[in-house]
Amino acid sequence: MRTEGSHSEPEAHGGIFATTHWSVVLAAGEKNTPQSAAALERLCRTYWYPLYAYVRRQGRSPEDAQDLTQDFFAHLLSNGFPCGARPERGKFRSFLLVALRHFLVDQHRHAGAAKRGGGQTVISLDVNRAEERFGEEPHHTSTPEKLYERAWATTLLERARLRLGYEYVAGGKGGLYERLKAFPLAGKNDQSFEQASAELGMSVGALKAAVHRMRSRYRELVREEVAHTVADPSELREEARYLIAVISQ
Image (cartoon, rainbow, N blue to C red; front, side):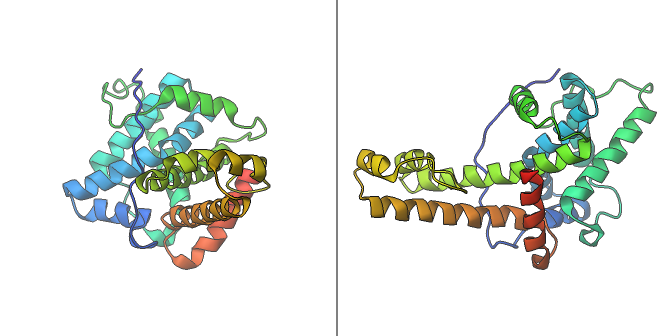
């Protein structure tokens, strides 16, 4: 079993549609360069948990799910995506799942030909945290496909939250962000503005404005994360609504 973990700062994006995940896939397929390979590796590192959860919900053990996920990434990094990987074929999350399904079928067919995995670690996977997260998934999410899509949506939200935190730290406002985190990024307030403003030495009005700015920036970052998973800006609103519905189920 290959257990490693790392937490790194999510890379900043330029213009909201400057580089979509589809463009990374196409570049990796057309240009065999260190830059395109590194971009594809970052993509794998970002979305490994939804794929891992899909394999786990199929009944695989944590060890097998980790090995299969690593092997899938090794296959992608060595061979790229299957021929026909094009944005017009659908959402990136759907295409990635189809690619994994095909890979698992091929692995099953050749299960007796060679030992799986070869012992290589392609990217660092925090399997202990993944198992904690997997155990927290709702039991009514019955199918591997539904769990994959829920995990995909929560991964996007988590990336937006991490980027938000890094921005506050980079701006010298890490302490403020730690206190503002007590206020939910969406939904009703659970904290008292009066109590929090006293602790921070801010007026209630200033604190409310700070919370509003934090939530507004978070929504922008979520929009950016979703934008990088669609091929066309016109798909952004529909995809965002779908992912919110998936999490709400």
